[in-house]
Length: 315
Length: 315
Image 1: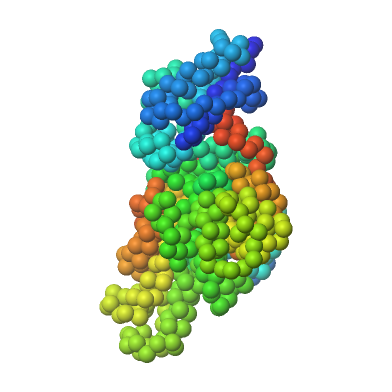
Image 2: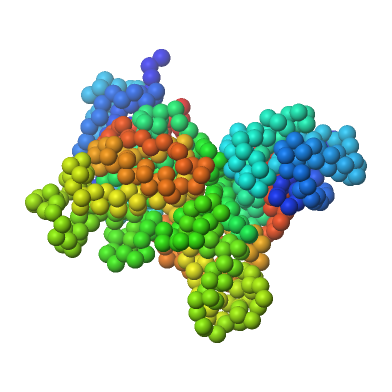
């Protein structure tokens, strides 16, 4: 009997990523397309076209599609309702319901970072683990909490929304969410770049960073490796904030492991070092030794997780 | 056919509370006994004697006992291992395993605040809800996280250990756990009493509290009702700390509701007011309107939750 297929989709503000999988989770093909239109109907139409094209190209036409998993950059409740996805301009869109007009197979929807968490848990660094907190450090900070091998969506789509934990009441700069002092302002690539700019403006200390035209998180971590003292201060601030935030995640869910992904995780061990150092200082005794791992699936975590969502419901 | 029974036990440092339930969760009898001996074997022996006595007294001898649920004041993993229960002097005691020498029925063990959470979720204020964060404000601060109608124990027995979230890095006073600045130092009855003492020593402000021989959390909340400005400042500090901690719980688990129990919750609406005010300020958009409820089962939450643990496994 020929295996069924699964379509995994990761909708971003710039690109939509696609994966064509077999029901056992093996990836046949992956590709991406520019997110030119962001209305819910346009996105679903695009997913339909792309899926059909890929099925044809891979000689899979006629194979039964088990389901379609979709990750979206916004808060999604446990019933397929996208409560808000600012980058797409969506608000209160029940995408699972809407999808019924386009597909005759079941569609599962989750927050993109939540989907990535599920991808890493099942196909990546968390393989074989049952509970995990995943953090993605990119332009922003996202996350996902896995318990008993399943995603926590939360009652209002807010589970794993680690980026907007209010970490610093003294902060005067505003976060994109409107509050001041969110984790994202210290632990995202954008946050670190901004902290670096502020630091340089406020000190005369000698630093490699001053000679750069544009400072990104990558340069900061490179400079930390060179023992640049200004960069080390930035790394300490990053580690303190993320380490403390993750100690709170442990007080809630006490996972088997933490997995750190997203573009910034390319900085590797030096990044983990700062987070772990402060996490172990802040965490309560039972969770003090929880291991930290780097994510393994890179940009594919989202499509793998979307496929896993379908597996969990239908395999 | 006559119904089976369940024994629910809540082991405290001072008293052991017992409940004899029918399998549907109705309480037949409750009673308590002094915790005179705290060795694991002595506690289990006591549970055995008390259960047999109660079964006899209630004319239940001969009825099948479905199981025994036990809440203990310490961290317990998902496999019945008590990792540490300082008030009982227990460390790495597998109480479920040990119980097999005393009982021929299954024994389920959980942290006492976790058990209380389950009690409130199923028989108390959380009736009918699926996910909940429970906080118990007593001498210390404990908690429990319910997801999909079940307790989160956590990989290392640390889930719901809200009392030792490190809320204030500037704190110089030490918590019982050794760290400085834990939630418990601002949100427990002991913590509020200590804050009051410090405050009185550092100010000359007129306050009702100064005339009291001993200040407890109760007097502080009574004084808040009288609009005593020093008491209001203490209430603000309490609300800020607990409100922020619960906003972190929402970032992790995004529950349907928060339920506040423990002795201090007798202060009622005025207490909720301070917590809610700051919670709504700190929480990320999707979880901003999560309802807050007062617990309903009082000191019985633990035995009800212990009975519920047995139900979940065997009914």
